[in-house]
Image 1: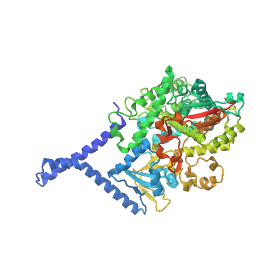
Image 2: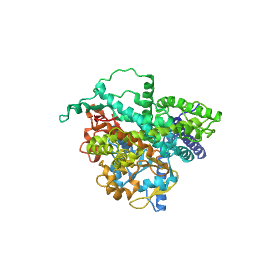
Image 3: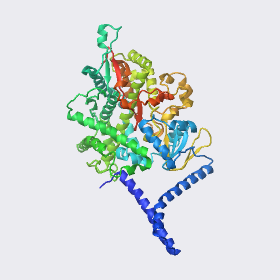
Image 4: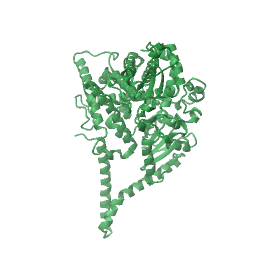
Length: 638
């Protein structure tokens, strides 16, 4: 029977501890016998009890001394170390725990980066971690010294029960295999199939309008409008625009992958906390879609908890895998889809028909053909409750992992970008007005945009660039997607002096979040949402001079394959949204009170002092409690 990753890791740790205890026990007995010592029982017990912490303390001291000596030998330094007040930096760990619940993203870490000029070392429970917001260091990790860094065993283990050996959670040959088999599908022709976006955007926008017509909206009286125009101008109150956008990107992603969507847009929208939720009978399809969507989010939340627990996460899941229930639901949806795709490929092969190209197939069809017959001897640790059970040896597991990895990448980052696009347009109505004018001048009020239309709209591109830049303003340093582990002793550049020595096996967290807020990289208005920075002289002054200060889609060999797909999807949805709605504003009264930013944030420096939503993160950024907005429907739209 297969066992969970957590149990395997815990078992390994127990065996190591047991081995140490046996060594101490027999060594003590041998020494006592050799020197004819009559040691009391309590002394033996004390030696057994204290041997483990003494061994651990000695290991840490020797490790730190060796690192310092090796750094000196190489004429290098180690990054400045952040020291807490308590042993093992327990106070720092508890501070991070409090921030997760009540703090603003980056609290504490921001001050440390300012004190250390962008690089520091932090030991949490004696686990050494380096953090950087230095563009030169990030460039080395992602590009120029790419071969010296990978995901690392600790990170891969914590993400395995959800991401498996997919492209987001693999290294070496497995990563190269996933990358090479997916790349051909992201051709220009594939990513510019706007019919896919149009189909689901129309459903999403209709959902927005239906919310008003169902009586959930409030009327907006405009005194200087004619009666006929007043009747065509409405405000809709949409609970959790973030929720609707996440469904849009999920349906687009599943249809792009599978050829048919999960149908999450068919589920009823949630209602404001102060409104009675109407009782309704859900269809079986809607109920299943709702379960899948919820499980999709819960699985990712479980991963971020593991990541933040660090090396000790398996001890919290010895008896129950946090992701087991969610993955069972996800696999129940994916298994028949994958099974049908494999059977389809086998039928085509048996009948002697195999398509010469994948132009008419889905990404899943392409992946099936790429994985069929490969890795027959591969073994995978899977919890028995979560394992895929159909044939073709290990191929379905590899296929399952890759599909789920791509789905997470396709849905979450784009949903985050679109959510905060609406947030920023609510806060900066001048940006909305200017963008809408460009859209109407270029595309008109009802025409579906083409790829050429989107390329023509310079301000749209600037908004999206600043949007990705500003969305990444929220990606906290401790995100599993922004972590690497050194696979050998290496050196990293230091913008302020001698290079940094990085021993093998060191976890490094690179913070795009803080890099995008650095005033020495972006100027004094680094935290201001100003799309013009990508149109005026600041482009040359900052971005052209140092391209690695802007990393919306990662960089180097692991750069996002779907970046143009995401850009097209965000562009298309924003165009259709602003064709149909002329203004928007936040509706904080509909926000659950407990999810609003704490009053203690007011008057704090930077964005923290002016936020009207509570940004949090799991694998990507989201608005805690949702994003509640009012939108004014335009006179002419879809």
